[in-house]
Amino acid sequence: MDTAQVNQWKDKAISYLIENGPKLLSALAIVVVGVFVARFLGGITQRWLNKRDLEPPVRMLITRVIKLVIVALFTVIALGTCGVNIAPLVAGIGVAGIGVGLAMQGVLGNLVSGLIIIFTKPFRVGEYIEISGETGQVSVIELFTTTLNHADKSRVIIPNRKIVGEILHNYGNIRQHVIIVGVAYDTDLNRALQVIRNTLSSNPLVLQDPEPVVTVLRFGDSAIEIAVKPWSKLETFGPAGGAVQLAIADAFRANKISIPFPQREVRMRDGNT
Image (cartoon, rainbow, N blue to C red; front, side, top):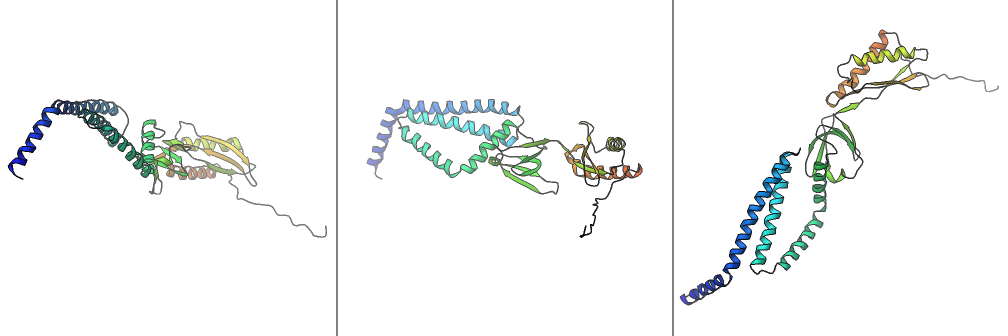
């Protein structure tokens, strides 16, 4: 490139700066103001989110998204101030957004559902829930998935879009056992019920609030069935069920309350009669 061309480019640059200098300064000022506004509103948002029961990554993500949107908005305004036709740019961003949304609708659906779960709190970490045909204790709530732990140490990872809008059964931090005990028909039922209540009250794995439910359920073929429904904490639910049944069996033996074997009476009739 010779000296004449260099001087020509310099002259063009100087002329452009003289003609558009005020616009460029205005655009730069708008971008700087946008950065400060983004930081200010981001700080307010961060302090507000810190008062909410949200995971740190979620708070960080929400804050960064707000900052990014504000800076992008001020940048578009600055480009318009410089004389750039922003209509095609806005249209292009809209078309690109639609394309990305269609391509990532499953991912975005999980993200939106995750935010709904985080803000509405239909369940919390540590609670036992039943959703989408799965049950388990909630161990992790993330933006895209929710993880349930099973008693056998396995995990179930459910996409958040499969949770929002479905019927949710939240057991909370305790669960109720349903134990059916049969006693002979000649048993003193009031005495049997009292023995079960005493057994439950002395078991440290059984919660006394709410009070265990002990009631006659039905008259079976060979026994009167009693429903025993105590509550226990989630972490002791498995051991508590076995301990309660063992304690009831021991208490029945000690009090000579019979648990009859299933039996049927078959009568044979002479075919000639």
